[in-house]
Every structure is written in C-alpha cells, then in structure tokens.
Length: 251
Image (cartoon, rainbow, N blue to C red):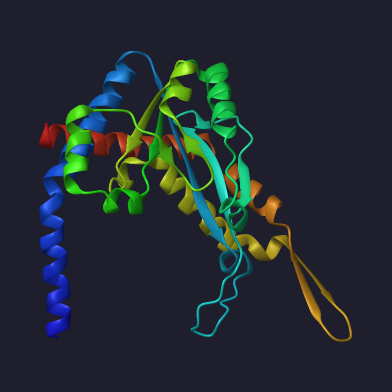
C-alpha cells in the first residue's frame, strides 16, 4: 500500500509541475489552427500507427517473456473530407531503424496541394521526445511559437517543405490525443483487424506442420476503406467540440 500511495503522489506532483506549460502549448496550437482555418487553410491530420504481429495473428507469444516480433508501421492522413487521396504506406518497423523515407513528405505535400489547395498539416508530436526535453526549452518554444521539425518513426515532417507547397505544419502536443481524429481512426482500424482477421487468413496443413497465411495488405486496405467519409465527419466534429470547449474555458 505505501508503494502504491507513493506512486500516486509522484504522479500527481509531476503532473502539476507541467500543467501550465501543457495548457499554453494546447492553447497556442488551437489559436494557430483557428487562425489558419480563418485564412482558408484546410485541416489535414497526418500520422502513423503500429500494427504488431500479435494483433494480426491473434496469438500471444513468449508465455510472459519478451519476444521480439515483427511490427508494421502505417502512415496515412485524413480530415473532414475523409482519407487523403494519397497512397498510404506500410513499413516493417525493423527497416525503419536504418532507413527513413525522406521523400514521402514532399510527395504528401504535393498531393494535398493538388486536391485541397493550401492546408494546415497537423502532426502529433512524439511523447517520448516531448517528455525528455527540459521544461525551460518547452516554455521557450511556447513563447517563441517557432515551427520545428517533427520526427516520426517513418518520416521527417519539415515545416520548410510544407511551406514550399503553400502549407503550414502544426505540431499537436502529444498529450492532446482528444484533439486528433486520426488517433480514433487508427483505433477503428485496429478493431477491424481484430474482428475480421480470420476472414483474411488462409491455412495449409501437411504431414508435419500447419501454416497460416494472412493477407495483411488486403486486411489493412479493407479496414481503412471501412472508415468512410461519414465516420470521418463524426470524428472531426467531435474534435471540433473539444476545441470549442477548450478555447472557451481557458482562453
């Protein structure tokens, strides 16, 4: 019990230290986004999610021990007009340790410009990067309102690249998940994979072994397809209500 109490107390204290900075970050992001929307920028949410092998197969390996298994990384974007008409990418995460696809953000910016015109491209910052930076650095960023490069696992999002195509790159603070409809879309995709993986599975049995083949690309494509325009509008409207609440309460 004392150990549990200490953990709770530590959580409360550490959270209180950064509430002010986090609130400033969130308000700065929302005010910047609303200003761009007022100037005619379309909002597009760009990001990635991980699909571990256990999610696809339904098998838990290791019997309680850590076992390194393949994980795929999906990169896509969407907004109030549905998924961006861009060929999303799927990477094996092991390959991303040594190689990043630097050209993808150029390609993405070009596609959204042709389809939507000028856009506010929202990318969620990585929590690990945010939490390891000193507090004074975070406060300085809030005051200076400087655009920064956002490093995802699979891609580097550069504000200068976005600017060259007429877009603006915005970093959504990592603790503001409820302001990112893409996170909800990823959750829907993963639930689709869990509930429908058997339909995309082929099995083969010989005299010694049994084999399981999963049509992963088809499974992911179908899951993305199921998150249609109507669902995207529901997700973005929910985010809009959160934005209005936050701006009304803390501005």
